[in-house]
Length: 289
Image 1 (cartoon, helix red, strand yellow):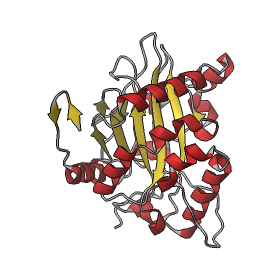
Image 2 (spheres, rainbow, N blue to C red; image 1 turned 30 degrees about the horizontal axis):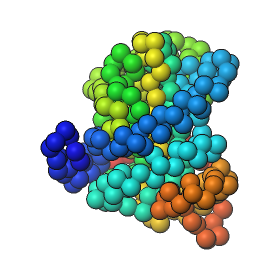
Image 3 (tube, one colour; image 1 turned 120 degrees about the horizontal axis):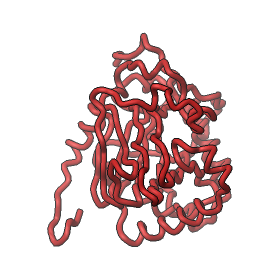
């Protein structure tokens, strides 16, 4: 990776270890200026189509715009540099579910603490090898002032009181109907993750994360890409679900967009049927190999 006129050698094994042990890692300068500018334009156009009512419905997280109607995100989703990094970290054969444009207008409140794994029934959910990861491409420099990411390292492998407080992305919590909900509070051991535009946060979907409030008068935008690494090692019902959901939402994308993400397209040909996902872990299973 380039930093001015210098070349930085990335120790991908250290990044892998950080992701496994802490639940996240940061890779600098991953998107490239051309793709960054193109993705900013796609996100801007999508966000500014929303009504005031739609914005109010997602007051805490910010916009939650599904990639199914945004094939212009294909360059970001299929970013070869990031896919090569995942392979070097031992997370190859990753398959894509969806991406989400999450733009927090300013001013807006905190995003609540939550974890995002939707397959706690998959045996890998209680192992070092997470079934599901996120790639967060921030399109703006982030800080506490404009709502940077907050994380609780290690909570992807440990039971936490937050597991008892409800699921993510319900209508009530997204609208922040109860500002005293403990999921909006500070917690011991939380860490801020401020980064530069074009940097990449790779996170374990099981890790509790949140954001600070955006206290500026500008939008703060991230593209969150949901991947399932080592796809063929997931249980068959999980593979079936990811395959069907991807093709339902993205199967009609233009061919040039699909070509850009071809390495990420799930292709399950077995007979297992998908079933409803499960966002709630079992406390007794934490600590299992």
